[in-house]
Image 1 (cartoon, protein in one colour):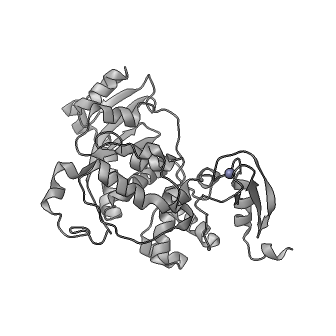
Image 2 (cartoon, rainbow, N blue to C red):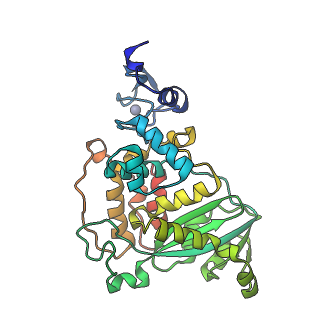
Image 3 (tube, helix red, strand yellow):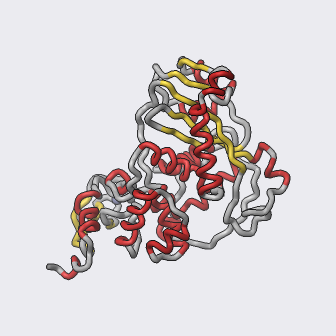
Length: 346
Ligand SMILES: [Zn+2]
């Protein structure tokens, strides 16, 4: 056997030979590429348009990973046991705290999105979280100290809208501050089937307006119904519990990623080494530019002061421009595109 194949698990070989599908150049999206020698245990390709070379894993959650075998184990633990604490993952996989943190985010950035519309009875709730800068050093009030007064103001509440029917959950961080009709529209106009019926759990007038505009049936559950039907509020209590208790709070920078995890894992097997997760080639870019995207977000969509916290730097994406569409957001409009949309940044 070729020496490059020694000590390589069959799982890793399977990922490279079967699960990763190379359909275009990850740098420029051209479909004109050729095989270009081999790299260790896998095929290398060369793009005929931009001239750059790439591997099947370029841009994915596996990009630049030294310990891919351990990453596979890490992914399996999440699949079997859910998101465990970083401390636990560090111990189980014998990796550093930072690696456990980074891998988790790369995995969360790989969550597949579905274009299927929500059908039937849709329970819609408006869920808020206090703006969190957990883990961000240099910022007064971050992490476990009581929040300074301005942070208690509703201008500093992060608004998440949840839409779920019996088989699927959609959760989007829409903005910081009050919700308007157009926020619902931006976030959900394309996700609701025409024959759906929206249950307006939080009795939000703007949602009512949205339903009217979409010509979708709309019901505000009566007080009796709400009292007797705890399921109406189940999503709210579950996601709040997940974010605030189990994860002990999540920085707003990452909130959409964790909401994505909750939504996906609730109804489906969360398998980060499955084909569906692995074939996302925006992961590396988004992961390395997350701080920049967050910076723009705080500037445009919040009144939170931004403080640079880390000096981590990745040469490979530093000169790539964050696409225009994420730059044009205004305060009221598109927080949703900011954080939820980062997984669709390409
Ligand atoms: Zn190319």
